[in-house]
Image (cartoon, rainbow over all chains, first blue to last red):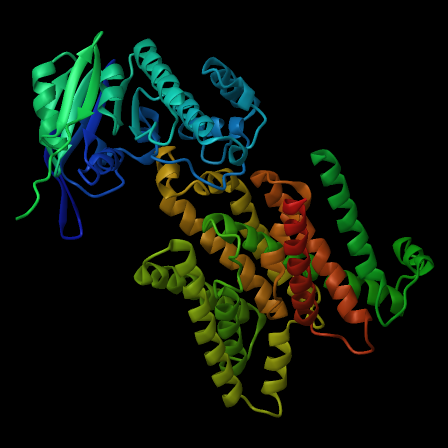
Length: 261
Length: 329
C-alpha cells in the first residue's frame, strides 16, 4: 500500500499541495484529475522525492524519505510528462535503462538485458521500434518506449504524469489498454495524472480530483452522482455529463452572455 | 562500421605517434628508427633525441589530447549541452590562473603547479554552477553565460598577474605558456601528468554508463536509481583533474575539448559508451598531429593553440555547412 499522509508542498511562497492524504493499493489504476496548476504533477514529484514535503509518504509501512534512489527505483517506475528530446540512444538501449537500479556500482546492461528489452517491446506491440533511434520515432512511439522502460524496471508501482496528453485518439487508447493490462497482470499499483475525464473514467478504477492543491473528491468507478459533483467543482458548472453503454460522455453547456445596457 | 572504427582509430593513433616521433628539426628517417629500435644506435645523439625528447613529448601530447577531449565529452554529457567545453565553462581559464599564480609567486615547481591548476579549475567550475543557478531561467544558456563571465574574470586576473610579472624573466614565460606549448615536455612531465589523468579517466570509464543515464536529466536519472549528486560531483571533479593536469604542463590548448567529441559523433555515430573511448583515442591522435605540425611548419615552433584554434574554427565552420547541405539534400 502507498500511503500519502498529510502531505503539503510549497514552491517558494506558493502552497501547491495542502494536506493531501491518500491510500493507494496495488492492482488498482488511479487517475488524478484537475485543472492546470492544481498540483497533479507536484503530487507525483512529491512521491518520487523530487521536492521537499511536509508530511509522510510510506510504502508498505516504510517511509519513502528513508529510501535511497536505488531502492525507490526498484519499487517505483516513473513516466514523465513529455518525451525527452535529443536522446540519441536506440529504443532498446533506452528501455534497457530500466534495470539500472539492479546493476552493480560500475556495471551496465548486457546482452541479456538487451534481449529482455526487445522482448518487452515486442510484447507491447512495438517490435518495429527495435533498432531505431529514440530521436527518430514519433511522440506516441516514444510514450510506448517509456512504458516499456517502466515495465523493464519491474517496479510494482507506476507513476505516470499525463502519459497520453500528446497522443492522438487511437494511441491514447492503445497506451491505456496496455497500461491497464500490465496493472492487472502484475497486480501493480498505478497513479496517473490525466486531463481527460472520459479516458480516466474508461480506464481507471479510481478517480481522485485535485482542486487548488486539495483533494476534493476520491471516487471508485461507478459512483456516478459523486462524479458529476466532482466534475462541476473542478471544471465549473458548465460541464455536462452523460453515460452511454457505461462510458462517460462529457459536454460543455454554452453560456449566454447578456448584453450590457 | 563500429568494429572498423576501432581499427581505424587504433591505426590513426599508431601512425600519429610514429609521425610525431620521427618528425622534427632533428631529422630521423626510417633507417634511423630501425637502428634505434634494434639497439644499434644506443648511446648516440639520435637515440637520445628519439627516446628522451620525441617519444617523451609524444606521450605527453597524447595523454593531454586524450584528457582534454575526454573532459569535453564528459562536460557535454553532464550538462546536456553540445557547446560546453573546458574553455567555455571557464575551467581552462581558472586552471591557468592557478598555474600562473604558482609561476609568479611560488616558483612554479611541477607538483605545486598541478595542485594550483587543479584548485583554480575546480573553483571555477563550482562558481560557474552556482552562478548559473543564481541567474535562473534557461539552464543551458545560463551555464554558458556563467562560463563566459568567469572566463572574463580569469582573463582579467591573468592580465593583472602579467602586469605584475617581471618583464625580463617571468612575463615571456607566462605569455608563451598561455599560448600553449609542449616544447619543454619530457619524461618528468609525463610521469607527473599520466598517473593523474589515468586515474581520473579510469573513474570516468567506470561511471560512463551512469553518465549516459544522467543525459536524460536529473529527475529521470534519479527515478531509474542513479545517485545523481555524487555521480555529477565525482564526474566534474575527474573532468577538471583531466583539464588541470593538461593545463599544468602545456598551458592552454584551445578547442580540443569542444571539437573532438563532435567530430567523433559525426564520423562514428552516437553511441555514448563507445564514443567515450573513441573520443580519447581521437583526441590523442589529433593533438599529436597538431603538435607535429606546430614543430615542423616553420623554422621556429608555433604555439599549439594557434593551430588548434584555427583548425577547430575551420572544422566547426565546415561541419555546420556540411550539416546544412545534408539537411537540404
